[in-house]
Length: 58
Image (cartoon, rainbow, N blue to C red; front, side, top):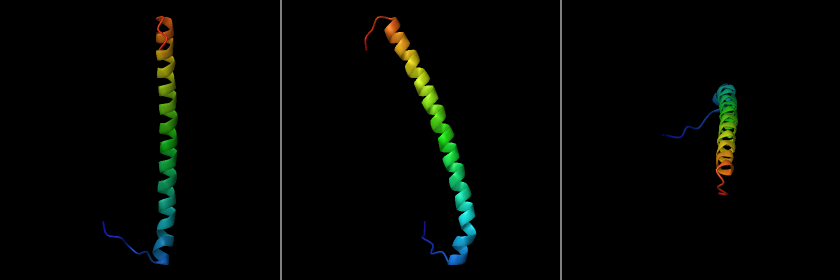
């Protein structure tokens, strides 16, 4: 990809779009992180119960 040198006017026009894309990205990543933490935590708790319930001390 070729680099582009932006004029001041071009940069000012595109900045709101870049901000919107960035906010959407961070929102998506935040939701995904929450889902992953909850599912991993849940899976870890289930695994821990299975290990302690079976008499295994792993």
